Image (cartoon, rainbow, N blue to C red; front, top):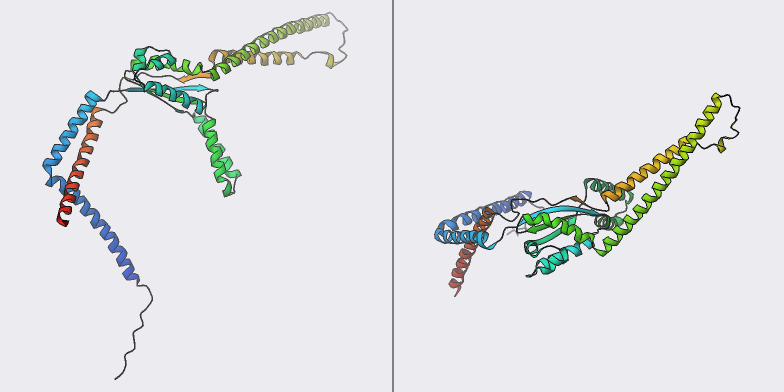
Length: 340
């Protein structure tokens, strides 16, 4: 009787079985998804009364909340630009205003903003975020690319990111300041109050005063220099006029050196340059670009708070979720009962 030799099993992977298992895996996922969708569809049909009651209650609650509990608020935004504003200063100031707005008695808010108690009671909250103009965004993107091209070493990427974040935060001197109120008519009166609030900050106030004082002194100096140049121009003009008259009379006057003669074109160019500086200083004093409202508040008639339709729709979705949860808990409770 011959002994049978054991068959040597192949260690090679059967690719057909592998692809078959992968296909079964995705098929099972698809079937599981379909079963779950069918379950979600079957549950409301089998529990129509429960879903109808809960959805109706949710709609009533949402309608009541929108009409009788939740107050409508109105929102508007202004852009305030200043060379002296920074993110930390603005955030700290807005935080103080919001703390006062959250108080039940808003006399502190009315005092610090110098507004009436009625107006203060209509304020909901303040918000502020840095504003970057389109020009600044382009310059910042160019700077990013230059830094990335200059630093090819990957070890310096974190340092570059930290520098860019610092630039994005510290290089912003304009801010979007938003206010929410219960009445739209209060928004217009708050612009002057907020601008005065920031302008009267001791840190900003001192710098505005010294900048204005320097501009006024520069304006005075430029004015006196222009007067002197005007006098010099008259003298040069009379001198050249008399020289021309003597030339017509046959005078033998000779200019010995060009250096001893003042160039009239240079004098007139200098006068024009000083005049442009004088006009620029006048513009700075009048426009006050170091602290200005770039875009003021706008009074909107439509509220910014959620509308009745949105609140009711959210209430219905919450009600459907609660109904599914009740059905799931009831099924789980029945399962636990079978284990006892």
